[in-house]
Image (cartoon, rainbow, N blue to C red; front, side, top):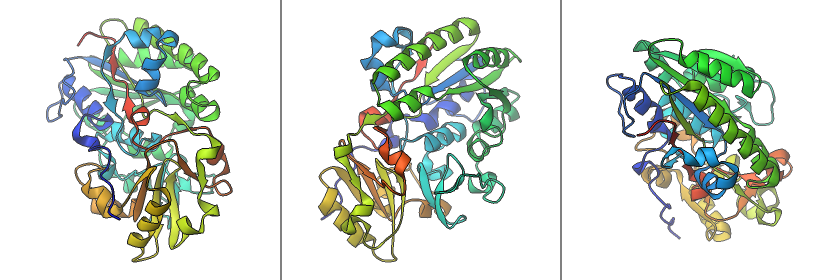
Length: 384
């Protein structure tokens, strides 16, 4: 059975990887592509709201009237639709195949294991391996913050203090001045101060609570809706404090869908799915399947026979040719893509209830290419 065609060519339209280069171009940096046609600016702030998909936002206008009043149209997150990949795509201006952070978890040869990019450690471990698995080596491409500083623009990241020196920060956000925060109050204060600290500034700030509550309670649950209302008020306060001389751009790293327990397929309970598989990476909505040498075609066929009506399942080569990871994939990163890739196309998830108990139990999931996961807002406080 041949692989069905992917739902879309992900990077044929603007994604998060086009946002920061467009901002730099709008700030006057030569050699940067303004694919988003952003107007000229001297000071720009990007606020990334983790998990606030464009469809979720527009469906809940009564809880986010200010956000829905802003100017803009959705863009695509990129692929996979997961935080680690999206953060580094924004931070480098590159698709996942060019920066190498190919999912929530990837098989990483340097670690000889499935590697969790958010925690920067092998799966099942807790402590960061950033001293031995060096972020600047695993992701050597210069960041947009490096490029901003080189062009004389003051670049600052305003993010939780715990991210200072983390592996993911070093991989995707290095080159900026770091302002660690504890809550929304100091995010507002530090973002405003950073944005006005020089004649030309590029400031990035981040909030995570919508994503956290979406995972725990489900997107559009009552706690999630209350959190959306709080973020709506935060954005309004931030825009007011920044004033007309600073452009505020609001976006997200992915959306989210709710998956019922009945629609979760436990990989470890399926001899068919696990046959000839050496490692399972990615996350429940987008799995990277690493197989015994030479077994990828047979594994792909077995997965298609079991799940092919609910997931796009293809080999690594088919995924690369389809452009899932961008126009090209760096040769050093091809092994971080599964020999077989399985991408959910409806309300299904492939979980591991024992090995990944916390992740498997969450109702809110993402990673695939449904529009609720893929589309993220691109909103501006200034007229375009």
